[in-house]
Structure formats: structure tokens, C-alpha cells
Amino acid sequence: MCGIVGYAGPVDGVDALGVVMEGLRRMEYRGYDSAGIVVQAQGALAARKKAGKLANLEELLSLDPLPLAVTAVGHTRWATHGGPTDENAHPHHSADGRLALVHNGIIENYAALRAQLVDEGASFTSETDTEIAAHLVARAYDEVGDLTEAMRLVANQLQGAFTLLALHADVPGTVVGARRNSPLVVGRGKGANFLGSDVAAFIEHTREAIELGQDQVVTITCDSIEVIDFAGAPATTRAYHVDWDARAAEKGGYPNFMAKEIDEQPRAVADTLLGRMDQRGHLALDELRIDASALRSIDKIVVIGCGTASYAGQVAKYAIEHWCRVPTEVELGSEFRYRDPVVTAKTLVVAISQSGETMDTLMAVRHAREQGAKVLAICNTHGSTIPREADAVLYTHAGPEVAVAATKSFLAQVAACYLLGLYLAQLRGNKFEDEVRAILAQLARVPDQIQQVLNSMEPVRALARQMADARVVLFLGRHVGFPVAMEGALKLKELAYIHAEGFAGGELKHGPIALIEPGLPVFVVVPSPRGRDSLHGKVISNIQEIRARGARTIVIAEEGDDAVRPYADTLIQVPRTPTLLAPLVTTVPLQVFAVELAMAKGHDVDQPRNLAKSVTVE
Ligand code: AGP
Image 1 (cartoon, protein in one colour):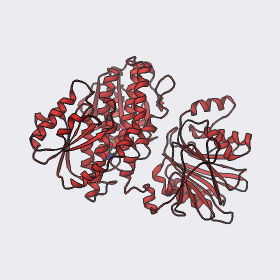
Image 2 (tube, rainbow, N blue to C red):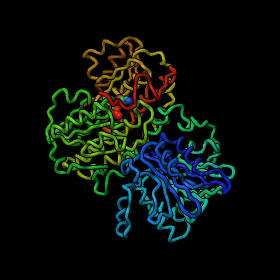
Image 3 (cartoon, rainbow, N blue to C red):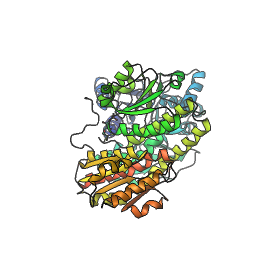
Image 4 (tube, protein in one colour):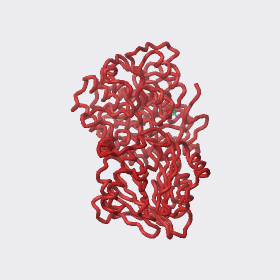
């Protein structure tokens, strides 16, 4: 997820640079791998861009200023294609430098488009999918002589998720944008107009916004706003007044980043899945320095992570062993190397880390490599240490996760683990291409199912507020519901500072049931009744065991599972998914419960006490 700002102001107006830089400051949370800005002045374009935080760009501008201008476009990057370098920073230019473009999203068919351009003699200075779009829009402009039409023609060629903004040296005072599956909002000012990834881009200047719909092209000047659809017809838009203040705008109107990031989960999972499988169903890893024969010869997989990442690894274990039939262990980063693990050149270590900097996980990766293992990183942060030291990388595309407690990165990690499992299953011959496609089709439906869960969370919020004084909460689950129970307990610990514990349902009778007393709240994550070995029936027995001792049962079960209803003091229903994919929907109520209860207790849910977003010490 990146931050984009566009501005078209009056010829005698303020300097566009200052307006756009201020917008970028308000949207730096959307991405801080690099930043850049381009202005249009005296019939030419002038740009500056720099890897790292926005402050690096500000320093560059102070040393090497841009000319005064009334039209500008800016970008803060969260890397997807290509690492966080100066060359990969936006904006990207056409070959003749007369057009500049910034982009948020993932152009799924960029490889084919790039190959076609190279065949026609184009050369590129970056590894990004964005630069391809810049060349295409410039070429279309040279053909049709109209920037809006050029953008429309190219937008129709692109697949995936994109918000594009472009400036052209020959079209003064004009910014043109296009969006598909990625946000873009217009700010209508007095004598000036704005474009942004969200209203934080221009909230200081205007609260009159226009929301753009899917597949639309927008053209702004200082005194005009025109919107057409990808077919070229005038488009309908929705104007609204923004009643947030600037700080709230950075959170998109949410009370905290935690709530915002929980709601971003459908997009985080969808973007992580986007463009991952080619036409033959082969996984497109971001970086792969492990050849297929080595992956075929793997005889053991060890998934390493800490905290929430380790629970994603536990979900991965069930999926990978079921699909690939390869023994799969899950290890805490902090424990791995101290147990003298048996690791060989035929071991694949999968290191899961949102930040890519967790020292416990990094040290485990180094140990595994010293033992000759191949390492594949699943990470959300481009250019971080763990991916750099891995042999292969599968990036999650959850966008920056600002809140310390992991939410969208967890679901994205689980989705990435499913992709890896399917890739290995197909590569090793355990699954046919059509079987992989069938599961991918089920996965593709999950973002909408997550949205369905998010749309029905008010009762869960009310329950959380009711239980604000709870002192102990237990979480039970079996099969893939067990790591979900552990993750739900961790969320409650981290955010509400309540003693919470996750158990495997079958373990209850081996000791933990002694904890059960009248009124004790217990969440139970129930597997699908369509699963295997009547596990469903065993979980119902678990619920009966705790109810018999007075527990207050809060049951998460799939829609249509009426067998659990008599045993649930509170029943939370989630959409029906295939057994192994259930964590992507059953986790969400537990996240919402934890954040709502913590807010009811007045806690800072974005920065809980004693915690850090990335633990870079052992
Ligand atoms: C999760 O809510 C916590 N913030 C913590 O457990 C986190 O998952 C763990 O520290 C691992 O971080 P990483 O994914 O950045 O490696």
C-alpha cells in the first residue's frame, strides 16, 4: 500500500511542492520504503526521489530544490515489485522524460507488458511494474495527443490492482489519474483541486471530497474535475463532506490503526494472493534462489516464527502436511537453535516475519543456513534483513502494519503459507494442476468472506464491552482452530493485559479443565462438521465438559452448524470455508473482541505497554 498525492493549483497560487509534501507527510504511514515528487514547470518536468523515509526526500530537496510549480504529484512507497532503492522509488518516467507517473497497487500482467516493450526496444531503469505503465501511457499519449485518453487506453490494458497518477510536460496544469481495485479520492478545493490515496492527502485544504468508483479515470486542473469510466463515458461519482480532523484522517476515520488494519484484511489477503499463480498454476515467488529440483528433494520442512508469526506457521503445518505429505515442524525462533535441531541440505526452513527484523527468527535462520538448509522467507517488509538472508522470498502484500499487535499481517501470512503449500504440492506431484486451481478458487473467495465477518461484528463488540472486567479468558480450538485459539489469546494478552490462554481442545481434560469455574469465559473455535474424524463431535463434547462446570461459552462456528447452538451462551457464525482455510475467517472475531475490550478499558491499542512492533533483540 503506498501514499499518493496530486495537486493542480492556480497559476498565481501557492507552490505545489509544499502542498504535496504536506500531503505525503500525512500519508507516510501508508509506506515508508521511499518517497518522491515531480512538478511540472516551464514546459518541463522536474523530479526528486529517495529511498527511505520522507525525511530523506526533504533533505534532498533542501540540497537540490525543485522549481516553483502549480502542479505536482508525490508518492510514498511500500515496496511490492523491486526493493526499496532510489531507482525503484516513484515517480517513474517515460523514455523521453516528458511523462512522470506514480502508482499504488500491483500490475498483475506487468511481466508480459514489459517483455513486449523490451521487444520494441524499450529499456528500463527500475525493477518496478510502475515504470512499465509510464512507458505505456507516454506511448499512448504520443499516439492520441490527449493525456486523459492515453490513461484510459492503458488502464484497459492493465490487470490487477492500481491507482495511477500522471503528469506530462506538454499538458500544463493537469493531473490525470486512474483506479482499479485501489483507492483514489478527489479533493475539491477553491481554485485548486487534489487527488489522494485517502483524504489525509488534502484534509488541510478542503473537506469536500469525491469518491471515485471502480475503473474510472479522473482529470483535474485548478478549476475542473472530470471523471469518465474505462469505456470513455462520463462516470457517476459520490461527493461527500469529510468530518474528520487531520489526525483522524491518517487513520481513515478509525479510532486507531488497529481497528483500521483489522478492516483492511480483505484487501491484505486479496493483494497477497494477487498475481501469484501463472497460467500453469505455478507460484510466482518474489525472489527464488532455490531451484525446483532442490524443492523436490526436500524431506522435512521447519517453519520458524515468533508470536503471531509462529501461529501462522502452525496453520501452515496442517495445510502443508495435508497437501504435500512432507513432515513439517513448527519452531519458535527463540528456541530453534538451542535444541540442536536436525537440519540438513534437504531441510526447507520457512521463516515467517512481518517486520523481517525479529532477532530470534533471524538468528534461527542463520543457524539453519549454517547447517546447510534452504531458507524461504514469508515477510511483509521489502528489503528487511530476513528476506535478504533467505534463499527465496514470498512477500505478503498487507501494506504497512502500524499497530504493534499483528492482525492483517497474520491473515496475509496464513494466505502466503497456503500458496507455498499448494506450490510445493504441485511441484512435488502430490496435487494435480486442476486440484491446485480448485483450492485457489476457494482461496480467491475468502476476502469477501472476511468482509462478511467484518460486517457482522457489532454483537462481538457489545460482548467485549460487557466483559471489560473479565480477569481470565480461555480459548479452545482443534486442528487449524488450535493456532487460531492461541492467536486469539495472544491478542487479548497484548491489548487488554488480561491473562488469556489458548489450548488444544483435546488437552482440556489433561489438566486445564481444573481452571474452569462458574462464569469463566471460554471461546471455542469449532471445526467444520464437514471435516474429518468427527472432530466436530469431539469439540462439542469439549464444550459440554466446560459448560457442565459453569463456563460461559462463546462459540465460533460456521454458518449452518446448528449442532453447536444448544451449547453456546454466545454463538458467532462465520461463512463456510474449506476446513484448512477456516483460520482466515475464524480469527477475525477474536481480533475484534480483543481490540474492543481493550478500548473499553481505555488502553492505547496501537502501542500496548511493554511491547515493540519489531523485537530486534534476542
Ligand atoms: C503479534 O501481535 C506481536 N506483535 C508479536 O507476537 C509478533 O508477531 C512477533 O514479535 C513476530 O514479529 P515479526 O512477525 O515481525 O517477526
